[in-house]
Image (cartoon, rainbow, N blue to C red; front, side):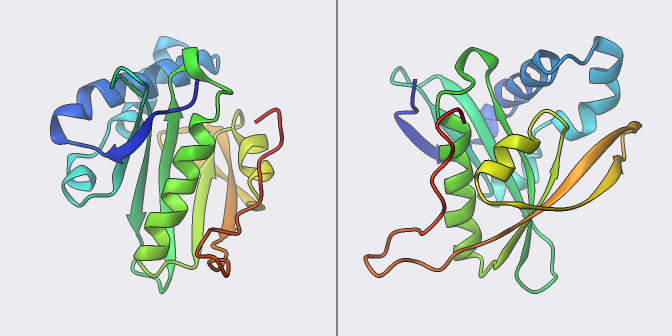
Length: 173
């Protein structure tokens, strides 16, 4: 299933998008105790929605199936990827890749040159297939026992035809 559209999130999407993040995290094998600790990171930020920095992938019926959120850092050209979450029923369907492409487009409009990603252990292959480079590890602030991989994705220039030159994902992604 590929998304029929990616659109800016609305404030009334927040609860449903947070539930997608919870389902995706639970699908990665985390229990209720871990989910409770992670909730500050899983809850969709209303200020980011209001700023136009959260995007929703919808299916053909208009049902949200995933989302991505960004945050400018104030450090010349560095954009933080707050997270990409895809409903587990739609994983490996191209939604995550489409949401990442949306993040790249939006980051470029914000004069971003690099996207900084803190990846759960379950998503490292996804970001690597998209061309992000692992630059280190850090404990997850809401659960220091979980180590996050840090990735940097250099935003490619637009191609001559105006298209993005982002690497194509691996067929399994």
